[in-house]
Image 1 (cartoon, rainbow, N blue to C red):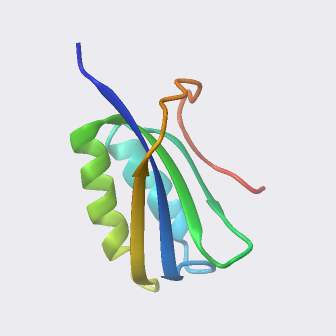
Image 2: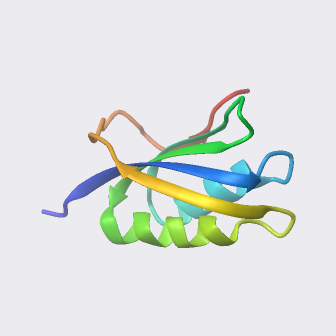
Length: 94
């Protein structure tokens, strides 16, 4: 049985208005993760990712780079309880 993890990832820097959420959605889907990504009022981007620990670690590494127009200054990731309610990886806030 593969163990499922969940992390709340907060990304700071120039990460809104640069295609960051689309970038995260594409990377998470490619890695087989579920969860969501959203812009926050404080100009950060918040990601909830659930899935294989290695895939989440890979996502965090990709997020540290970001899309071409982004400037990532800081990435914080904390363990959270696995909800198991996500069917895919989506962008929130539409």
